[in-house]
Image (cartoon, rainbow over all chains, first blue to last red; front, side, top):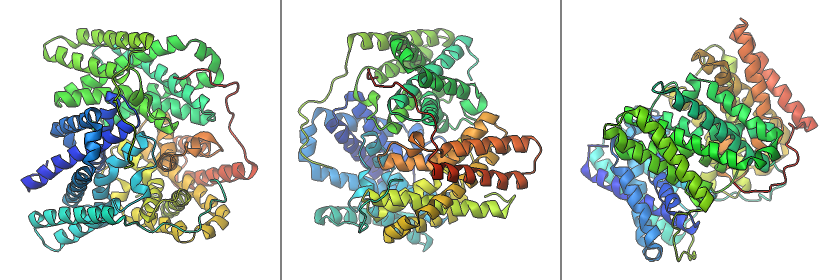
Length: 212
Length: 212
Length: 212
């Protein structure tokens, strides 16, 4: 999909795989059948990039152009179906790969936005959407309030990464340098926030008094 | 929408109507008002094809090009609103027409994918999305875990149909022959699985131990 | 986005802001963190127009072309986060601005549909989708059955407005006259229905007997 670096392509495949496993884990916990598990894996893995490509009018989109993404998501989806507890025991590894995917997806989304010459704030929106869109769809389909809207520094890592990447490119840094630095930054923020349970501020004094 | 056969066009209208009734039935059970019932009918009837047309960048999409689909969905939506129990008594007929719609939608989605010359696996994804996308949106709006992700051979019938259709076309079968055969195949799988309560395998040993 | 009238543009910004506040109010009640609150504000404010632009293949879409919309939604989202109870006390004002936004969004959606020369019923669908799409997405993400599908004359105000606007334009009325009249009409219907708790008819006799 991107030819500026083989490494980013590899991280993108890795992230697709990790996102697919993450989607399938949720589906297995929800007692879905094998089809539901694979669908949730696919939605999680390719949902964010699909919406990004729609918004940027990129035709054909990335998984129609390169069906490897579909195959990766399907294979990833079958793993928790077959070996749920093995994946659960390797949860830290999964969270790490998921963070790598988040970083790679963020960079790719930001880069495609920059190439399309959209405004800076739209670049950040598109990058974050690429990073977290699939996870939001996963949680909607599984009837959870999307976890990225509730807890943990997850989307925030993507926003910070996208913003840093944007300013780096605008500042003249070559993409070959800005991309890996951003991926590492996103992974570090995500893993530290996970380890130390950082949270964003929540609103205070919000006992509901009315219904809208 | 497709001119290769009047029959497929008719089945497509019939399926739109059946999907609309199915969406409205869910809305009525959820105590929605008349507007909600019609919206859920429309989403169920034209949601899958709309996403497919977006992904294939088909402009204008099928219901903008031929508003008959909108009218059919609206009329279908009003029926359960007016005569819920009559529809309920005719449930087997509804399931049959719904199966016909699933078959027709699957064939149309697959055919448009083949015409757009996308990879085989993407053809199957687009066909299945056309067949089940509306039902997933219906269940998300009605706050159900999408039924196609949980139970029954529904999406699977669409996947099998799309795969058979794809290989038939690639094997040189004319579309006029492959299309009706596929529709019949999907209907038979769906009705048999409904009658005998076939299920896809579910994962085992999934007592949840963690939260993601 | 539209140059036929500065007033409509202003109402559109105002509506975006009001929709953003409305989305953030829901998010605060759901105990989302600051990121979730801003995301829900953005989705509510720009979701409907985004889907409309996708369906009409308008590229770039309105918030990529004019990022003011994104900034307005973000700022709007921060207000309930900081001052939830102040917004709650000003609820009637919020409902009024929200109605203005509904009117403005309806007119803009209808106008873009008319310009694209789609069929009348599709104009109404696109206009209503622009008006209520964001609110539906807000409720799906917050795990509510979308309020516009359940209660109150909300979507109906949009449908009536879109239909009146369509016939006014087809009848030869200049858009500079039809647009403000329609906005006022939508606001009046919405505020009266809110004040007097009008409801659309609900279906009767719907004790559920079956599961689909």
